Image (cartoon, rainbow, N blue to C red):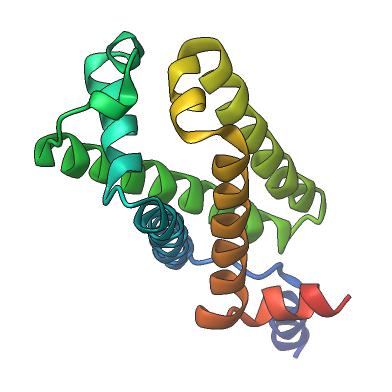
Length: 179
């Protein structure tokens, strides 16, 4: 009898095991939603300015050809290869960030201290992007203006957070949001 009650107690006192593959799937979905949201943001801005796909062209040029080629960004010749290449790298980065954030949220379900890690991850990436662009790709900031990039990043981060809560429907995250 004691063995049965012991197994009953241990079954209910063990911490919940987080399914890592599910977390990474959620991270990929959230990252894809974030990347798509940012791409749509810049597509709208580019359309309003009358320069379709200007932003991914500038960023692709800076990434693959170096920021020194952006001395006159208005004179850039359109290259589908640069736009598609940058879009792929952009998605990869967002997918990786989504997976890292999802994994941290999974760890936060067991230890609340990891919740701060998610916030810290966001702050580091946000300011790291603007700071890195300032140090290494200043012509990009002049071509695109940093406020539009900052606003776009905030919108995409919000979309990723909403996808984690609403689209993916993780019950533990919903409970954490109510606290």
